Image (cartoon, rainbow, N blue to C red; front, side, top):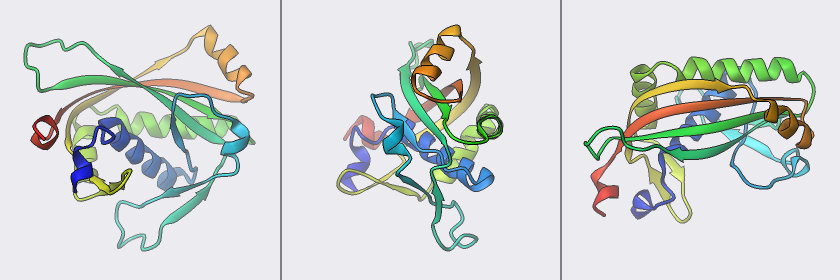
Length: 194
C-alpha cells in the first residue's frame, strides 16, 4: 500500500474519520468534516454521509446517515516543539461546528458533548483511537491508506469569541461552536524514511 506513505495520509485524516464514525453511531447525526475553505451550505444539504462502523460483525452494513444540519470545518495548527526530542509531534485541530437546520440547539449540544467525552481523556483517548485505527484503511487518492501514526494524548479546549457570532451569522447558520483539540503523536518509520 504505497499510498500509506503519501503526504495525504495525515493524523488529521484519522482523527476526523474517528469522530465522524463515533458521532454518527452514537447520536445518529451524520457530520461531514471539511478543511477550511469556501463552501456553500446549499451544496452540503444535497450530500449523504456514510459512517463505517468499527465492529463490522455488530453492524454488517454501512450506516447511511443523511445530512442532519450539522457540519464541521477544521484547520490544522502545527505547534512549536517544546522538547528537544524531535519524534513526538504536537498539533492542534481547530474545529468549527455549524448547525443549520431544525433543533440546532439540541444537535449542537449532542455533538459538542460527544466530542468532549471522546477526545478529552488524555492517553485513554489516544489508546482508543490507536485501537480503532489498527487494521483499518481509508480510501486514498489511488489506493487505501493505513494509519501510520501512533497517538499519545489528547486535550480539548473551547473558545468563545465575539467574532464567532459574526462568522456564524455570515454562514447563514443558527448555531455554532468552536473547539480546539490538542494532541501528540509520532509517525511510523515508513513515513519518516520512505
